[in-house]
Image (tube, rainbow, N blue to C red; front, side, top):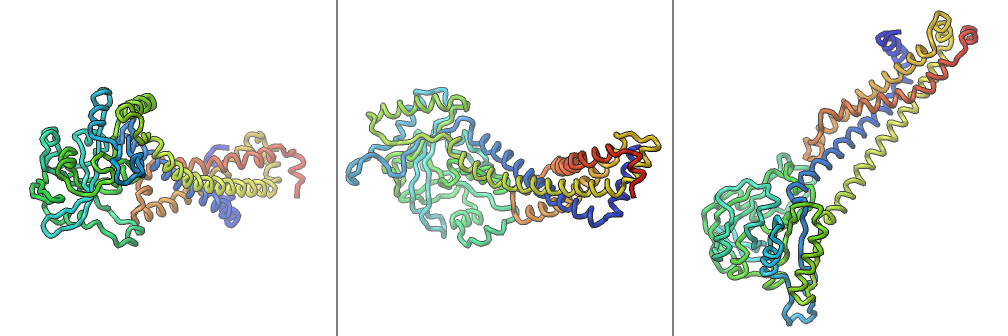
Length: 429
């Protein structure tokens, strides 16, 4: 029989046994919905992880003080901490490093027009912009002249909003007052008071919308950092405020430029910094890959849970198709005998039942994809950023999985049908 005839026969068989067929492809549909949802999550996780790692840098690590601070237990004794000189020495000693970016954070009183509140201000060097740059710059960034001459200038980050706020965000009433202020006021080029001194706002760094911001997917260094940047030398000399490490710096972000060099540089930098502090400084070097490992593990666990549910559902649909096909075989024994008697081969008989089952899987796949796409679009409209990652090939792959399920589920029943003796089949009542 031609494939068109096989499909026609299969369609009639499905139509004549509507309820039985519906129950089979309904289970297939549930599996396809789960698989489609899982494919979107897997792609989203892979794509956004790749983008986040590209922005962070392939060889990123952070030298930082532990939360407990330095080694001294006496609160009145001076603490041994990381210093700006440590950062400059690392840059001089390891000149092939792509980035050496020190950071000093202080909570200070910020005043601009009607705004007055304590904010986190971060002192940085010009190398800060070498990694994690997702911004649109208005004005200019801090330059080496600013750092060398303790210039009282600053750059402000303007956070991106949502294209469409997700429901969960609406449960929180807290708002960043400073961000609300700069979004509704033109501050570029104006003067802002940080602590006891006045600074000129020379640049605005505008973040992309949160749905398109790779830093919202992985907790990256600096994500929860300051939104006001000043030259690190200026922060040390003029910025009055509270700092966890006193006169020291909080961390040094380093990028080796290549992932394979992380381990060797990690050991070298650790020995180098310890040599500058007589081996007494308590600090830690964190590999960025280690920092995101737990996050990716948690996301993968949730994702694979959904995928397993989808596989179980589609297998249940496959079992249903197998039962339907077996029942069809027993109800059509005489038909099989007649076909064998007029010259049909065993392969012809197998093909008939396999095509019917595969077609049933195809119908279930189409239904599952249709419902799944509607659900994904609904979740995307509610602000689920993962659901915005659906790709054209995902529905086709989901339908293919449903068809393969029908195909493999029908092999045994079709093989059983092809083995029937023609003479005995003709006698069957």
